[in-house]
Structures are given as structure tokens and as C-alpha cells.
Image (cartoon, rainbow, N blue to C red; front, side, top):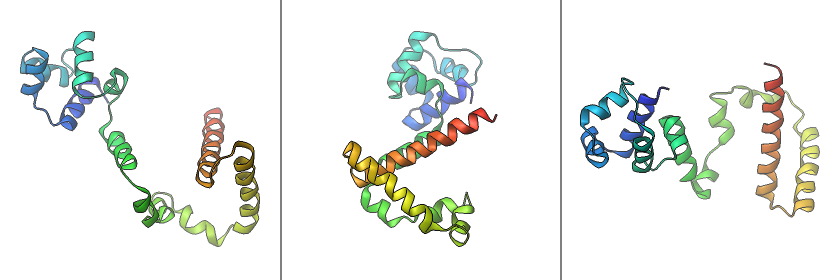
Amino acid sequence: MSLGNSLFSARKKSGLSQEEVAEKLGVSRQTISKWELDETLPDIRQSKKLSNLYHLTLDDLIDFDIDVKEIEEIIENTNEEKQQKIDWSSVWSKKYPILKSYRDEVDINAYSARIKELLHSLKIQYNYSDLDAMLVLKDILSHIWNTGNSKNK
């Protein structure tokens, strides 16, 4: 995504018009338009003002992706009660069909015993709760996956 698109998306997400942003920054509406169309770039001081106005870090403003921000907000605002109602395997299986079919192919009990040992080890060694141990194990698996895939590229 270009800087202009990032500026446009961040402004829209903030619910501000080009005129309102221009007024707050002391520039013309045309200047805001040129930034959003990638015709010109805001200087570093104006960029910092924009990041403050949009409640983003400068790095986040530069790489602003409205889809990612919306997903992050949904996750942040989803309470435990709602999470318990969601069948995550079913939801993710729409994107990754293996999550629907593996249960008929994989000996789940064989893997369950080993995974329970790992979870128990994390709980005992680090005094983690059940949930924390599961999240740590999941993060370790993700790290292994990402590290392995980056070497294969």
C-alpha cells in the first residue's frame, strides 16, 4: 500500500474529512488531497502531526492497513463469553479445509498425550495457567513454522 493510500485509510478510519485534517494541520485541503494521491509527501513534522491526529505511531501510519487494524480491533474487543460461542475450527476451516477433514485421518489421541505433556511441563516449570500454557505452546509452534518456512524460501 502506498503512503497516500495509508493516509487516506487512516483519515477515513478516524472519521475526518480532508477539510478537517487540513484545518487541524494548518494546510490547505488540496495539500491533504495531494498527499493522499501520492503527488507530494508531507514533511516529517506534518507526518508526526498526522500520526497524532489519527492516534497511530509514525510507523503504523506509514504501513497503515485498514483490514489489519479492523481485525486487531475485533480481537481486542471480543470477550471470553463471545469467544466460547465461536467454533474456531469451523470458522478457520472455511479458509483452511484441512481443519475440517484431519479429524478423520489423524490419530488425535496419540498427539493429544504428547501435547498434554508439553502443556503440563509449561504449567509446572513456569507456573502458567492452562490458557497461558496453551497460548505459549501455540506461539512456539507458530515460531517454528515461520522459521522453517523462511529458510525454505
